[in-house]
Length: 97
Image (cartoon, rainbow, N blue to C red; front, side):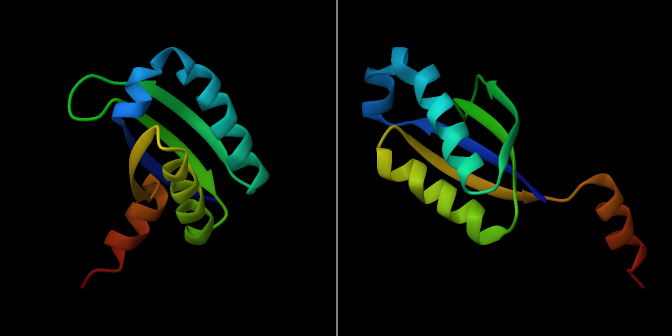
């Protein structure tokens, strides 16, 4: 599984209905699970982003489909980054000349 860091901001629609946000998070978890992925961690944050999710998905296509699906609901905007675990980081750096 590949790890992804998903940075989320509420849209105007999403913040107006913020009290429903926990239910939407539960629904998003289910959607990702149905796609073969999972949430590893989730945080409400202060600063540039409203929330951060650490997710796993089988591949980039699933991660993209998940982000697009969230976007179609109209409550959040996402920025998704592929994340390399420490072992992969060390391996990549070790291949440098």
